[in-house]
Length: 131
Figure (tube, helix red, strand yellow):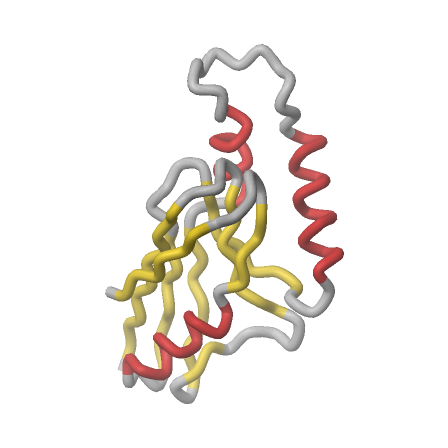
């Protein structure tokens, strides 16, 4: 298992992990298998989405903000209930295909850590399995 440490800079942001996860896959020696990218946090997530146009990430964050507004009367007293809900909607892991010793992503796909309660130091776990 590999761990990527991230220091986020904003309350909400997407951090591109594609290159770093790709290096981990290549270093693993696995030619064909799976790569699991998991976030051990309850106010952050991971997603696979377009990495060519940053406006897509901005649109995703804007849509999540509309779906989960900050100004609702949440029962959780720590003030970060919206972050928990956004993390649940996005999900805490992604399973990716490894083929020929490399990630098999679509042309425009990238792997993103999704921060919803930053800035913080965060961890992402990467496990590569296969033959």
